[in-house]
Image 1 (cartoon, helix red, strand yellow):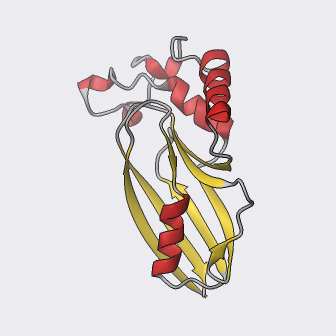
Image 2 (tube, one colour):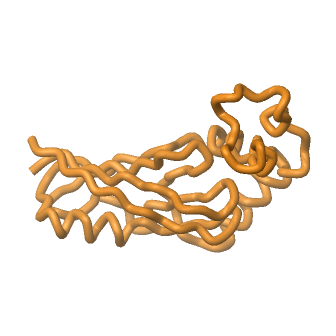
Amino acid sequence: METVINKLQIETEKFFDIIDLTSKVEKFLEKISAKNGLVNVFTRHTTVAIKINEKEDGFFNDLRKKIFEELVNPKNEYQHNDIHHRDPETICPTSGGMDCKNGHSHIAQMLMGSASETIPVENGKMLLGQWQKILMFELDRPRSREIVISFNGN
């Protein structure tokens, strides 16, 4: 069994930016001539979620509302946002950490529950359902994000 890894830099444009990674993963599998195995899509960030779901605006609007208005509203107070409660090792290097008021983003990622998704591959194609897409959710401010795609198989 062979493992092949590819790293992508994704530039997000806004809070709760949703990026469909499906075609990028398909191109990766095509490029390496993948046959059968497993492909994994992983984020190296604690305020990004990778999920498989429908790509549909109504769903995205409902999700945004439920998570960020009802469960973890960015306007609420979070100890993570208070520099006096933070572990110095986790404080952002800019502005003494004051621009890292993102406690809501970390909680949202935990609620969404995934830094990665693994999809079976058969005959070079991902076995996704008809409406399933591999989605990256930016749960914090816009920035450059690294996504790691790995394939195990032949």
